[in-house]
Image 1 (spheres, rainbow, N blue to C red):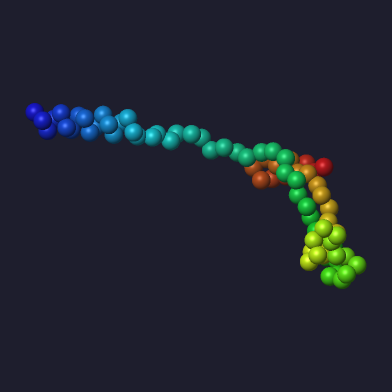
Image 2: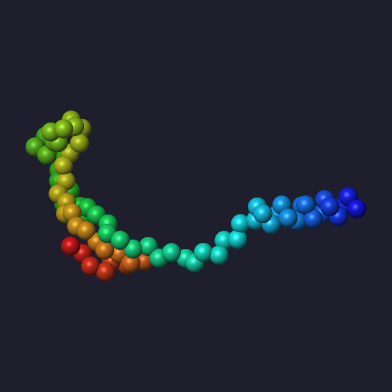
Length: 76
């Protein structure tokens, strides 16, 4: 009699703590800001950053992409 009570207690406890993951896959979408380096400027004192003494500047382009499932749909 005690074995059946322990068995049912174990089964009920297992069902209570069981996590059934039946979520469907999410497709990522949204806007992303990206910086594309256009030209790597020479590391001379002329292109030294004013804020930090060891950082040299490069020429870049900032654009915003709208992606659906990592595929860019449009770029602004």
